[in-house]
Length: 304
Ligand code: ATP
Image (cartoon, rainbow, N blue to C red):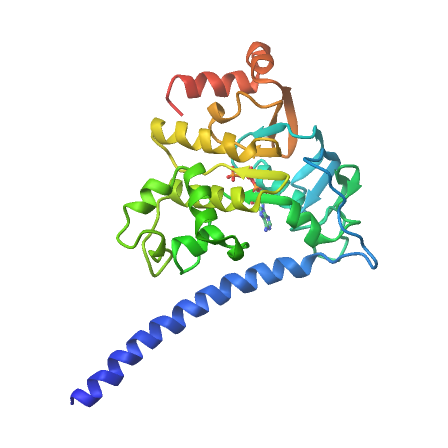
C-alpha cells in the first residue's frame, strides 16, 4: 500500500507540474503568435541610436480588425529625453499606442482580416517598420500594467533578460525600484519563489519588479503603462518616485490612470475614442477648462 501511495503522491505533483507547464506554454504561444504578425523587411538594418532618441507618431491609424478602427490619425512627438503622457477613458486606445511603438503590430499590414492601418512611427527619424524588430525591442523597456512573473526566484525575475548582470546588480535595481526591503523580509530573500506556484505579489509589488527589470535593462526608451489597481496615497507617491528614476535621461511614453503621475510631463495627450481631443502641459490643460480639467477636478475631489 505504501508503495502505491508514493507513486500516487508523485503523480499528483507531476500532474500539477504538467498543468503549470501547459499554462506557461500557453502564454508562450500567445507571445509567439504576436511575433508572427510582423516580419522584418529583407535586409533590414538595426535601429541607429546615440543616447535617448526622439519618438514621432505621424498620422497613425490602426485597427485590430478591419471593420473597427481604433486609432484615427494620431500625431505627436516626444523630444529626446522627454516624457509624453496619455490619459483618457478605458478603451480609448492608450495601450494600443504602446503596442505599436513596441512593434507588436505594424501600422500597415494589409493582410486580409488582419490588423492594419496607416501613417508611421519614427525613432530618431527611422521608420520602425524599416529596421529590425529586435533592435526596436532592445531599445525599449516596458513596465506593463500587469507583469507576468515567471515561476522562479524573485532574483531571476528581476534579472530576466540580463542574467549575467548578477546578484549585486539585482539588489541595486531593487533598491532603486523600492522593493529591496520588501524582498529582504521574505523568508528566503532574493531566493524566494514567486509567480503562480510561489509567493503571490500584489499589483504594486509586481509593477516594482517590472521597474527593477527595466532599470537593469537600461533602455533609452521607456513605456510605462500604469496599473489601474487602486493604490493608497503612500504607495502612489512611491511608485511615482520610482517612475521618475526609471525615466531619468530617457524618452518616455506614460499611459496614466492617475493624473498625479502626469503633472510634470512635457506634453499630455487626452485620447477619447482613438482621437486626441486635447493636448498641452498640465497647467495649460487645467486653465483650458475642457475634458482634462474636468478629470483633474474629479480626481482632486477624491471621487474617482
Ligand atoms: P484601458 O485604459 O482600459 O487599459 P486603453 O485605452 O488602453 O484601455 P486599448 O487596450 O488600447 O485601450 O484598447 C482599445 C480598443 O481596442 C478597445 O476597444 C479594445 O477592445 C480593442 N482591442 C484591444 N486589443 C485588441 C485585440 N487584440 N483585438 C481586437 N480588439 C482589441
